[in-house]
Length: 413
Length: 148
Image: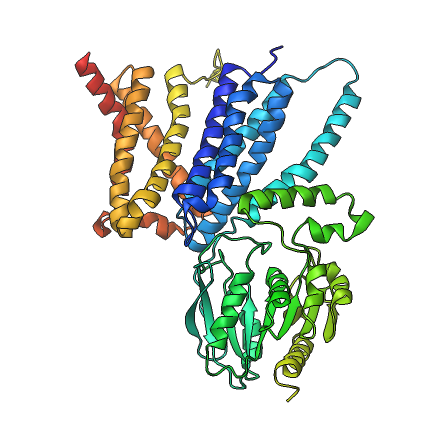
């Protein structure tokens, strides 16, 4: 029985690894996101290439079982960029680094097949077979849960596929605007001027918050619906967990302050999911944001997960790997825990909404509410899922959100 | 009328070595095609409109595939022109099948959109590349035979 892979298997392994390296080069250096350059991705790109080079050079020297394990992990991870490329091609048409993303699919399937073949070829028919297989299955399950899943998730959240250019339907004519951040990124936005002197920032996407915009516009509020950096029409690298994006909201506040229709800095924000988290963080550091509605805020890093204590022991390693991978891929430090940030919003108002059957850690909202100072509100919506409050309870949602903003921005007029 | 005896092949149907090698090598052509598309996005698209970029991309694709077939034919010579044309035909079938199946069911393009790639009257040169795939093995083989 050979100790390692055969020359042909080594060739297959190295070819598949080379295809993954090609995608890393295209994604990080040759075809970076709009508004970014190759130098923004230097550490992450070089580290990924170094890892792939090490796999190509050293793996064939290892035992077949070890080679199989790494091939299976690499193969599974390779399917993530393939899925992203497919999703982007279906949403906005194939372009950019989608082509090398498709190649990752070929590489991924090849590596998975190679891993399975190596495992099968090197199985040992003698000894305590059942015990050995059970322990290997358990180890594989734990590695998948604690390592492969968070690594795949980290790749996914930092490469969110862009959708097609949406069309504004906000109940009144909307102006296409560009909001430029402090770090020079152009963000795509829709702006409807207020009739009551107050304006609300809607985050993290124009299209996803259109229904909320219509609700606010019909009550006289102005809205600035904005695509977060790296999302849809905005420049920059995406981070679906919202790390390092509060300057988007600072720029949005400055944009609204410069508008003559917005009176006395009456500016609020309504964020969904990661948009809610970002608004909470932005409001903690920006007093010009006078009131925040956050729906579906949850966990952004291991910092929030750690606050759960012993009950999170099983998922803590997963969150640690995810946080570490995101730190490497984005070059950003993990943001502070929302539990530390929400107390800084008072005496400005905060309204936390979450779904009883939500996701992404939104069951932490009662803890955020506990930590927040007055004035504050909490609403748990029994029906509907993550960020589905307006759809599930339209009349009550409208009544509560409107009353909150009226009180905070119009003085209860 | 007497019943004709059932004919059973004496050995399982197997592809010849040449066919096995050349059909596997088609995967390399897929890699080259997708790499060429990346090249278009990175090096051509920033300086040219969509149609011009597509046309340049067809030219670079023809060059890259020609080079690939040249290398393959030197390594795995094809015995006859007929076999070379048959291999080219098989590559075309695989390429077009892959293009339409992947384009429709994976990338989400409509059949009409995929069909537009073949509209030479609209300036699309993709059929040239498909034609090149069909004849390249035979042409390269003929060139090698002449030089030998």
